[in-house]
Image (cartoon, rainbow over all chains, first blue to last red; front, side):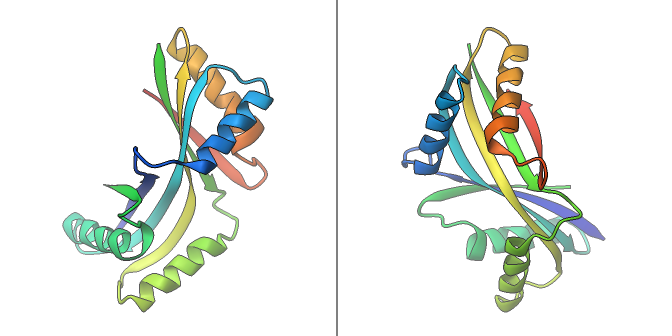
Length: 81
Length: 81
């Protein structure tokens, strides 16, 4: 079976996010008001071939830990469907 | 009121995603098997101050169209909470 794993990788809350700060400035320059904070992360979609959802989740966890997220600076969240 | 807008920006399905292809190769090198496809996009979280959810969604749409997504190559999806 093919499962889709949606992995969201975001910078940790207490770290600076310079990319987000740049976008916040850009929004103000475009006249879009009322935006107080911007944080930018990655969204990774994996198509995983696995026997069941548990195995698919394990593979996605392994991929996130070993390659996709740097856990010193980022947190990740996995949704399997 | 403060609303959180989660904007997911992904490359269009029929376009090449070289970053995803690189991650696919990296996963194979790490011995993580069973992953058939990888697509990589952006996840942007906005904290929006607005009177109601409709206004917050309009602001998020405007930000996505004008700054965050390039609609020639990317599609976006907004969730307000």
